[in-house]
Image 1 (cartoon, one colour):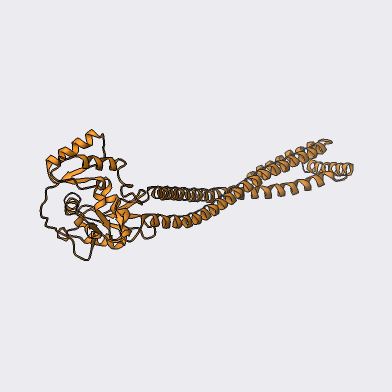
Image 2 (tube, rainbow, N blue to C red):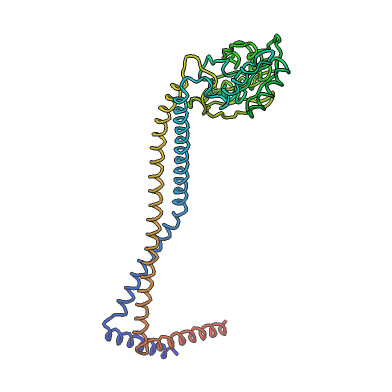
Length: 390
């Protein structure tokens, strides 16, 4: 058997020499080329894996940029709407001129004429309420306007007979949205907060006692405190006691003129409710200030804020576009690597086929297989002999 193995090895060497001489060592060169291609393929695959591993993080970063752009655009849109509302209000103020009823119910003038023409009142109704008061501290204009709401369109009568006559006038003229209250004249005893606090009652200059009484009885203005600083307002409302005579509290927004907060609720209940700016014509005149001037100042401020927001939105859009471009570039690179890897695989397969074709031209494969069989037989016999010796 050993002799046979020696003969087979000799035939293999001879066959290899013959093939080498025949094709000038092309098999060796092909094998070397395959190794180079395999190394290149593995490097490309490593690059592809790295890109795929970074894909999720790139997508997360891009999504954050998309969200930032969306939020920036929303702020621009909101500010544009605010600006548009202010400009429309400015135009309405210009058209209204000095009309004292411009901000009230659209049919207020007609209703006042009907009251004047009615001779059956025991005492002429007083109203609209907003025309009988002015604001000593204009910074609270939005809070005051929103606190009273449609009540500023209202009237006060001193007896139920006059109330029934008011109903008749409203019905006859088909007017709705103008409230009234019946309040007989009486002396009021007030339970007010400490003098250190501004209240709705204290910041209003009220020209008629019946109007003052109506605001106290039906709106409790004497116990509504006003504190500019939100933090201080929260502290006061958190520590208040029933005998402090504080029913509710309002604060101002620190950086947005015309905006504010309602702070706290009933005793034991805390909370902050945002209050947006008053978008209509003021029904309560602010002392020392013209609403038209206030609105023009708001427009100037909003223009500056809008420029800043647009700049921020532009930057956010640029960042989002850059990150989207980065993702697209990485994906294009990944797809290119997939193609390059496949080309390498195709070339490797082609070269391997050439090697197989060269090896098939002769007895090399046959002799190699015979050698493998002989080696296995020899190994088996060696183990059997070793067992017998033991």
